[in-house]
Image (cartoon, rainbow, N blue to C red; front, side):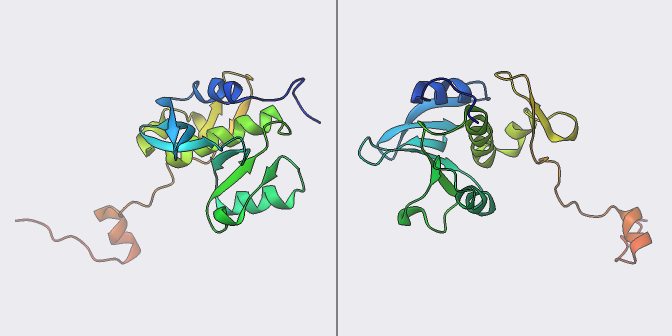
Length: 161
C-alpha cells in the first residue's frame, strides 16, 4: 500500500530533506544532490540512469533488495557499497522519508545528529507527525572512570601526592 496519490519527484525529496538541519541543495557527481554540512547523502542519477541514490547500511540495503519491492534496486557499480537506488515513481512516501532521514544521519556529524534525537533516539517528523525510531547516537564507548577501574580490576590511577 502506497501513501501517495501521485509520483514522487525530486522536489518532494528536497522538501523532505530540507526539514533536516543544515541540508543544502547542490550537485554531487555532476547531478542534482543533497548535502549535509558539505557531505553528500542523496543524489539524483541522470535521466538515462534513473533513480535516487541514498546512503544506507549494507544490512539495510540487503533487507530492501530482498523485500522484492520494485522501488529498490542497485547496479554493479554500487555492489559492496552502503547505498540503495530508489525508484521515485514506485516508492512509498513514508518509506522514502525514513530512508532520507537515515541517509542524512549516516553523513551528518554526531553533534548534528544529536539535534534530531529526543528521548530514546526518536525523531518527530514534522512532515507526518509520526515518530520515526532511529538508532541513538549516544551509544559510544567511554573509558572507565577511576572508580570503575577499581571495581572492574583494571589498572587503577595512581593517587597524586
